[in-house]
Length: 598
View 1 (cartoon, one colour):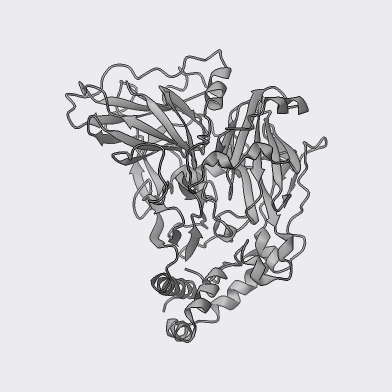
View 2 (tube, rainbow, N blue to C red; view 1 turned 135 degrees about the vertical axis):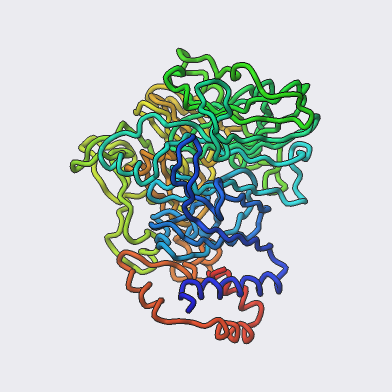
């Protein structure tokens, strides 16, 4: 017998098909993801890896601006699962965000269908499992959002898109890594760096024999678009290609001023898009390198990923030493100055025909300010925890907005402090009360000893300043109010600060977190709750800024009994089809807008 969850998914898919066939609206794109374990020897040792449809990394999601994306996720793991779509805005649909503050997890052996629209967005992003440290075992893949044909891209059409997933890797399962953190210990040095799920090319005798490595095949005299994502646990990586320049063109949904780099630091969770011109003489293959940054290069030599760039007319194997990383061991400003050099292309069109710079963020008045500080982990209640402003986040058993919908009290507090607490750190479900259409200034102060990268779901933000030392009101005098890059992640160097500006125009509950998996797992996150007060008591008006919970919403925590009731009331597909036949197309479209599952 088909399970209730499967039946509901099928019903939703049928309705989506009917709507897409009968409406001239935006297209639907469908994906089916089976998330399961496989065994692979990535660094020469057999280990458990999380695969999508039997592949690691998983298949790319390749869509176009305004497409409706439907992903049916089958959880074949032995634990709960959520998939999140890092950097994809999901206008009005935070119910699809795939983090514990917005979604109940998908139980083992269940499937659940996500649907979201990539509304008014372009660029390079990635998806990954957000629970239980699972990203450390894989489960990730790239997301490409292409321009609509009517919107020009600010460079000639490349020969091809090439996705490169780089990241540090531990040859232990994510469950073993969790045990290490739960035991109060640090993870230590990674065992290596993977490029597209593969280990390093044997560039010297330090690399064991028999390691499978990635090869990127290209033709001479062409230009390729490289979409590079740091999907690792925590390590900042320097990315470079032997004898080639990297022309930076796009960062997480924003076209940049095009600049050449011989290498670029890519921090955990970040995505960059480069134009690579194959203009070398092909006397041999070339190294593609991702190596650890901000560490002792000798001690961390093994934490280096090496792939091969192979011209179709190549005359031999890559040889010689790897191209050098930045020589800045005693110059802590090099990487920061490189980051500051990345600028918004204000004259290029993004997802819309108007230039990116027509949104004059520097002229908007700030309505609220948060100075958010992180420190090294501390013990709270006898457990090692990480915190922001002295608050270590505790995920609610009932998702925040679901609790709102059902008028539950005491699930969370809207009391996240505007500045660091002076007392002892505490563990709480404390979130930010965001003002709809407000303009938020967030200063991220890193008082820890390693680089931290921060991500905000549902939004991009403007990186307007960064510097070493303690932020002060005078620091605002250094802000870039014109062409600071708009993106979804920002790094904060140790002993330094980064300032971002956010326009709160997307209703929902949105996760603000460090992308460093160890610190995130230990509590370094919060949420920004954005509610449109004008829609109170007006459901039709509310649909314009926030879609209601979908019909296939999962229930957990204090609402678990609703899930049990749902499973006890089987609904058949023929019944739904009979209802659809009686509905007018306009009514059907309204129901879709109101959250019918697809």
